Length: 439
Image (cartoon, rainbow, N blue to C red; front, top):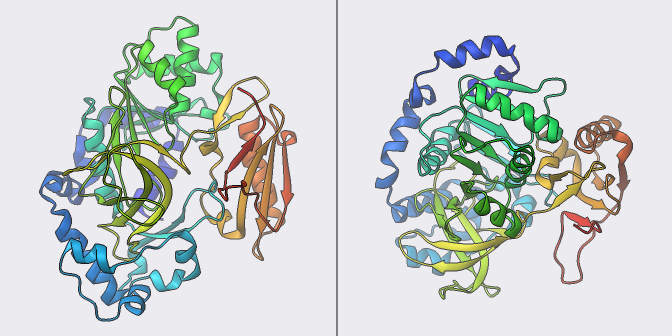
């Protein structure tokens, strides 16, 4: 286990009193993230996107079997030539030729393997550099800086399952982590008390968690004006949530990204546009004929190309997400992002909701299945359709029942159905959640 993984997954579960002391001693700001992080963060604005594009594409053609077979000895000299000669790939193509996307210079000791979220059909196994934190966090922190965050302690309300503990502390990342599965009026009050105790001004959350927590606080007449901003990703902000946040003067910084780490964009609630980070990766917007969308107001599919992952480079990768073009220029702006990340909610017995993203099943489990889909026909109950493969065992069934049981307040409210096929809509689209619950 790497140091970064230990800090993220093990350290927070030390006793809170120890981590509280360590948190108080952490006055190092960005120093704790290492020299590579600090160097990258100071050079973000100097990145030349065209140079990065040509570098990664020509490297991939030379060193990655898939691209070498497809393009031979081709050398790309310009972005225009890239657009004319390099074709598109998607998740199915990568999964069909997975081994061929690995660089022949790969150093497995410097890699991390993971999967895309388990709510989008068959998950894609990914390989990323272990030092990805140096550029990933540099970009995220730069986005958070927009709303005043400066290595402050953050509250975390996302998908952690803390069991008997109300909260845990990550003293290195300066995080107070809460359990979104427990969110209720009484738990919201407890979260509020802890936030005030630690003088937390910024909260990282799913938009639906930010909405739910804020709603409970306002219902109890708790003053949350000390929260300068919610930092939100992994879901879109619905119209109802946006209206609620604006009405209650709650500031939201929302970002768009995905597990493949090809595209990153952000917006503030006062703007309906997501501004794409030009040095993070190449963002393209294409119509149904794979032609670039150039007119504001037109919708297209978001297509990404990595600038930083040489071990497993994805080039002109169709994300399955769609957006409407707002403006082109040095930094593309889009709005109305929909697709895999569009907001979907699971309704629990007590009337509270959790986002579908809470049910995401990252890790080894995803290598044991060939597809997963959720159905909710009755409030409080969830049905899971699974296409299992040869690696699937009874332990996997126990795991998913336990995992979903935590979210649904009991394993008895979870049922599993095995099938050979997922269910698609008449128009051919796949919905990770098919719900008959009327809000």
